[in-house]
Length: 352
Image 1 (spheres, rainbow, N blue to C red):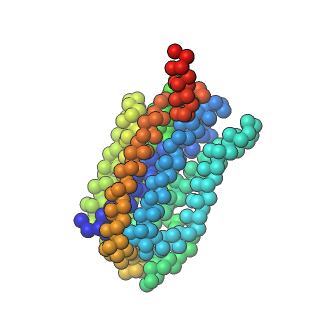
Image 2 (image 1 turned 135 degrees about the horizontal axis):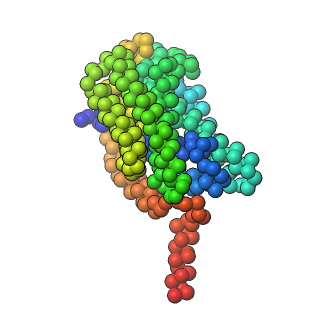
C-alpha cells in the first residue's frame, strides 16, 4: 500500500472514530428533551458525557489536520466549497460546548432548560450536517477544471444527502440511548433501554437504506464496482439488524457495540465508495479530485507518517484511561472528580 492510499484509509478511520465516539455524545444531547423526567435526571445525562465529550472531539480535529497535511488540495476545495455548511457546524458545536459550562451558572429552571435545548440543537444539527457533507463527497459536487467549487450552499442538499443526514441522526440517537443504558442505573437505565427499543427499528431501516443507496450512488457517480462498496454496506445492515434484536433481548453491552459499528459502517461505506477519489465532481466527472492529484509530496507524507506513528498510540492510551476512570454507573447522586475522590481517600487513611 502506498502512502497516499494509507493516508486516505487513515482519514477514514479517524472519521469512523469520530462517529463512533462523538455519536453517542450527540445522541445523548438529542434525547435531552424526551428522556429525563426532572432536572436531576437531566443533570445525570450531562454528567454521563461530561468527562469524555471533549476528548471525543479530538478525533475531528485530528481528521481535519490529517486531511490538511496529507491532501491539501482536498482540504482546500472541501473547506472552501462547503464553507457555509462548515461554518454552521462550527456555530452549532460552539453552542453545544458553551451549554456544558453555562448551564451550571444559574439554578433557574428556565436558564437550565434553555441550555439543555441549546445542547440538543447543537448535537442534532452538527450530526445532520456532518452526514450531509460526507455523503456529498461520493455523490459529487460541481467542480471546475482547477478543482474549485462551482456551486452554492443549496447544491449540497439532495434527496440522498438529506436521507443520509436523517439516518445518521437516528443512529446517533439510538447509540446515545444505549450509552445511557450502560452508564446509568435503576429506572433511568430502564427507560433508556426502552427508548433504544423504540429507536432501533427506525435506525435499522434508515441506516440500511442509506448504505444501500450509497452503493448505487458510488456505482453511478464514481464508476465504482458494486462489490467493494456492497461489502461494508452489507456488514452495516447486519449489525443494525442485530442492534434491533439485542436491544429487545436486553443485551445492552452488545447492543451498544452494534450501534457503534453501525455508525462506523456508514463512514466505511462512504469511503469505500469514494476511493480512489477524495471528492467526486458532478456533472463534470473529469474534474474530480483523486488521492493522486490531491496528495502532498512523498517526503511530506513520510514525515507525517512518522509523527502519526509516535503520537497516535499516546492519544489512544490517554483516551482509554479517561474512559476507565469514569466507568462507574450514574444513579443521580453527586459525582466526585478523581481529584476529590483521591482527597477523600487520603483523609480517610489519615483518620484510620
